[in-house]
Length: 148
Image (cartoon, rainbow, N blue to C red; front, side, top):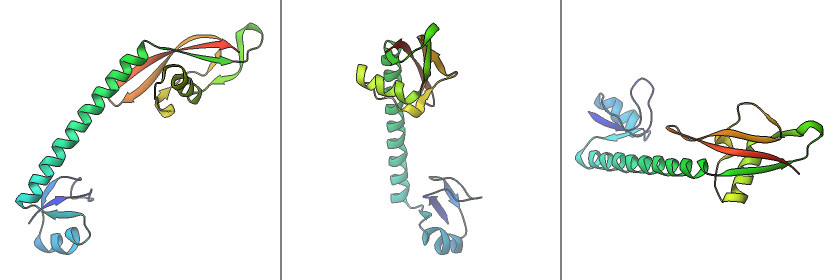
């Protein structure tokens, strides 16, 4: 019997795969535990429509990420910190502070978990910070640290 998997099943396949299994395994395990449905014409058509919709959503997310990357490349976020002698700051600039200042200053929604700071920013000046917006898209934002 051909079955469309609704979730990943160990040693059988991933969600959305069409697999050929014995009738008993399909009826007694996969279908009753809602791990799969019979691969009839209606379910196959539903699967095809669902995959097309997922591809469309993925393409839209990629386009949005590219647009956001272009938008943040032009912007400079200014973060103000207390500093001592020689331009040394008290503490360092975190990704949370950068995300909050980007929201305040430029109305950009950037998730703090997507901001990658290679080395801690502990002195005044300008820095390039990488932002991973999508698995295929990374952007850079300029961060200027000034004395408060």
